[in-house]
Length: 124
Image (cartoon, rainbow, N blue to C red):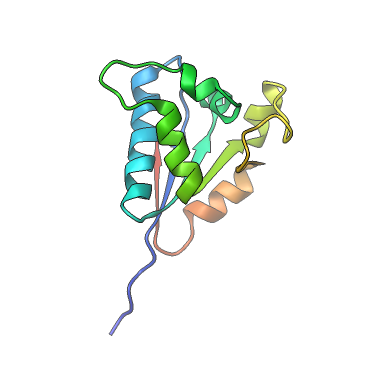
């Protein structure tokens, strides 16, 4: 008999304020999964990288969407949040600039997480 498989969800947000609905979907799915007990890793890439900075998620507004700052808090509390190394560098964001609990890592770490046994990856 097989044991229970680890449930691990990797969500890559590729959009920020430039595509607010897609951005909000990524955060909503990640936070919902985290609240349901799924091990979640949220990757901030492209314009969503800005949300790794203090106060930026609280500035995001989208009608009929949960506040991004609250969603990010859920994910930071129960899962992992990573800002893409190259995306952060292009925006002059360093490790000392990001929110507590946010790491900066690159493609090798993303691939490792996405390929982990029981992992599912979604890209928004």
